[in-house]
Length: 277
Length: 249
Ligand SMILES: Nc1ncnc2c1ncn2[C@@H]1O[C@H](COP(=O)(O)OP(=O)(O)OP(=O)(O)O)[C@@H](O)[C@H]1O
Ligand SMILES: [Mg+2]
Image (tube, rainbow over the protein chains, first blue to last red):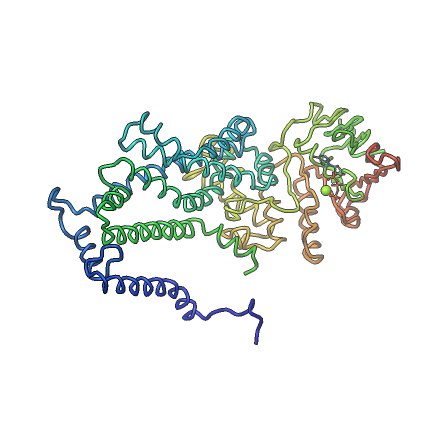
């Protein structure tokens, strides 16, 4: 018998083990739901399968009686647009200011302390200020995401740039490269895959900020809908929405990881080579 | 004291050079003349300041006191294309293929803004880079990334990348220190033939005294002559031996 630390599941077993927690959770839910429905067939707190299917049908496939639109798609589109703007602007700030602060001591001196302090400001606490300054429209939601996410990405990129061995930077100078050329040919190409990783890590908090902002003031959006139907205890809509958001987040994460691997093969094979695999 | 190579003025002239970090004196009172085309090997105990001296030649560090002249002019305050460099590690760019690493100098010197070449100029640069890769025996690996190359091949690549810039001086800090003995011998042969062909000046720091003797045209030994047991900080290293070496034709 091998030691526990040396025992690995086979491929099939690994898949099964991965599915197990989901299956258990789902089974527990169905059990609890069935028990509640025995007492009260109209129970809305833990809707059964048929109620959930009806809920999904209503929001995802039927046109809303009032607006004539399919709610889920309208909400998804609105939320994804805000998220894309917020994360996109954060990534742009991240690569620009992170690279500047990492490469140039003259830029690091003012940027680094400021960004560190900024990253400690709780974004939710200044949301009211954002609403006052930027209005209740899209801009304040995007700014909230940027404030919440950009400082993290900037700091991450800065430290990634500082991780580049100093030998490389000296070598670049010994080839006569200017600071601009070093940024273009040495630093940015090596930091871009790190930016993608950094964005992946910050997507979780970006979703939090998005849904919070939508919950407070919006006309559409995934977070808006969840908090709207909460008033009617419409768990048959809330639960599918939560599952849908989770799926969206999962797909985004996988897509970024996959794209990174394809675009920057030198990094991943290099990492593997270093690990001796 | 130094090898009488030519009657011409020395390419490098160092006078009463001191280097200290705070209280810690690393180098004291170094004076040295080096003529163009010399191959200077530097040996010495660990921690005696060889790398510190090397970094001053690079322009990464400035002397605390004394004078350093390159072709009669004050030493540059930062690294530049006149001084090529190969470190023990991390001398090549991991995100560029061997060919792109070797071509880099031609691209950045030919296109200040984009740092990239296109069309006919790119093809001309590729040709020159390929010729250099061939000279170091890497023609077959032109399309590979550094992590796909062995340690010896990576150092060959680092040499090729530097030599494309046709530096006046080549600076090597334990360039073969991490290599197996067999591969090291190959690298010595390569280094020697490149030096004989291009006749740049070489400074090579090494831990391997035999390597210093067999490769150099001149051997410098760094050592701390004075030592105060109460204050080991107080005295730095000097050049204790400066030996001219026979160089094979
Ligand atoms: N930036 C620095 N600040 C303070 N002390 C330094 C600095 N750089 C080097 N030293 C000190 O200078 C001394 C010489 O270091 P150096 O790296 O030049 O030695 P070396 O001869 O290259 O040694 P090795 O053979 O081990 O590479 C060491 O005692 C080191 O601690
Ligand atoms: Mg050293």
